[in-house]
Every structure is written in structure tokens, then in C-alpha cells.
Length: 233
Image (cartoon, rainbow, N blue to C red; front, side, top):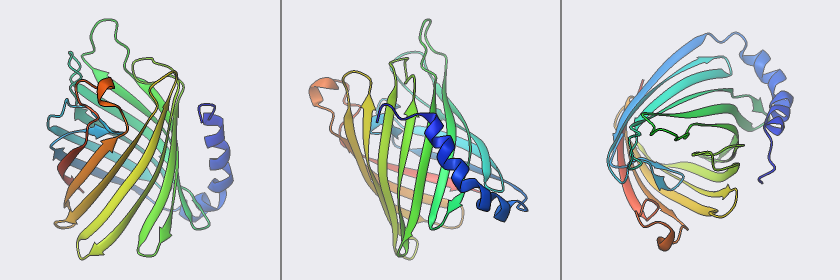
């Protein structure tokens, strides 16, 4: 997995691009926004806010199958770092029954301590297919230099979602984080979503990891339940 290259993403994307681009070439631009708050900010099983609340917001521009966007959130790493700001771009072609998402992301952080270098880039290749009324999918993320300049890393995830009643849905994911050197781990989550209306939604989610307690004295990867409110418009 650690030998996964961004070139593989580009090759797969090229095969899928032709027909999908032609089908959506006439689509005009669209802009969307999202804001929200949660009792914690968990990313791949790790709390990014020292188990404290999160406030976030983002904006996306779509033109046909292509998109670009940005997203901001508070963080707390026990130092002076105060905010994460992400920028990303990609495209979402369709290959038969498979909806693909091929993109590049940059994670940036403000007010880093002198000498710290937390920013990093990541390539993404994701896909999903319909499964009854729901969807199942998978994704691979690769970076040649991970958070804190700790070497290459690959994250692989399987995920799915399913409506279970009017306005209610369940979703979950299982992932494996492969890191250069020691520290590989698994993470999983399962949540219940409720659509209040066309704009607002609630999410109640259980998170856990395989990280040993002795390797996480701050308990940033311990089991937890996170509740969040999001508005998308």
C-alpha cells in the first residue's frame, strides 16, 4: 500500500473521464456552502481538538464533473496551532455503475510553533456504487510526506450508508492507516443521521481505533461518541 503513487490516480481518472465529461460538459457552475459544529473533531480516529468542541465551515465550486473548494476548522494540538485550513480540487466521473472521485487535497495549519511543519498534501481516489436504497464505497488516500513531516502514509477505507426511515439514515466506515515506520492502526465509526429539513442535519456517531492505550496517554484515539449539527446550502 505504501507504494501507491499519484500516477495511478491519474491513470484511472483518464479512463473514466471521456464519456462523463461529454455528458456533463453543458452543466453550469454551482456554488455550495456548509457550516457546522460538533462536540469533537475526529479525523481517522484521532481527535483534532483535544476532545473539545469543533466549529467549521466551507465552500465549494462545481463546474460539470470538476470541483474546487476550501474548508476551515478550529484545532487543538496542545501547542499554538489554532486552525486547520484545507484546499482541494478534483473531478467526479462516472464509469458504468461506479461514481468516482479523484482529487488532490492540501491540509494547512495556522500559528504553528517555530520549526514546526505540519502542512501536507494528499491524493485521493474514491468510488461508490448503489446498493439497494443505499451506497457502498471505498477510498485510498496517499501522501509522500505526512502530518509533521513523518514520511509517507496511505489510508484505505470501506464505507457505506443506508436510509432506514423518513429523514433517518445510518452510515459507517472501516479504515486502515499505514504509516512509515511504526504506528499503523485501524479505525471505525458508525453513525445515525437525521435530516431536520433541506438545510440542517444532525449526526450522532461512535468512533474507535485499534491504538493501544499505552501509546496514547492523552486518549485522543479512545472510543467516543460525537454529536454534530451541520447546515448545507
